[in-house]
Image (tube, rainbow, N blue to C red):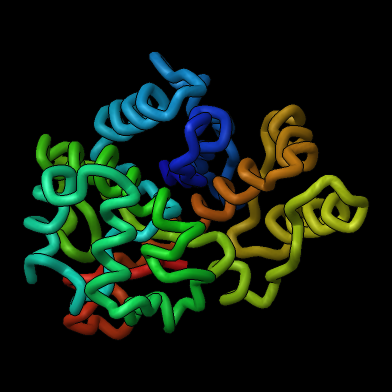
Length: 267
């Protein structure tokens, strides 16, 4: 199974975090699951409960599962307090006591600039990991999801860790970068007729043009995707397609040393 998670560090993250699950079949991929984190076991709209439920959900997945999470897994190497990614994640919560502390320290180290990782530049992600709009996601994603998974040895984070035959694999994804990579980026978030039409076009692309094609088994899932004006449901499906492609090629095409430290955005 391939999972895509559209992540959020908002106070009501349980409403904004969406999870999509794709399963392979002879004709392509089947969308088996599509739901917000508040509907997971023990999930709630409140952030702490939602992220704890998401982490528990991932830790219980099968060893063959690949999960695409939509948030930066690291910061630029020159701003890291330790040169090893696992140590950075393991000590993250102790070093940065809040998202404001995290943001302020990174801006201070960078002399007020927003530095980007190599993979941010290559994959055209919209922001630096500690950008004013994105630092919430980076902070809560690393502290409350990656940190516990790494400490519990409940998953392997690629490509910083080697893939394991006994644990699910986690990869960093960015739906916007995926759409840019395949020439289908458009503004699809919002309640306007133009945004709704863009969502419809992207769903048709996923169903009939994108390879492999996606089949919506449940008409309700298709309706959710089209009616979700914030685009979170659609983002989670796009994230799952990136997870699928990561499964086909778990090592980046150009396996640069920076990827082992800063992370890599799979598209």
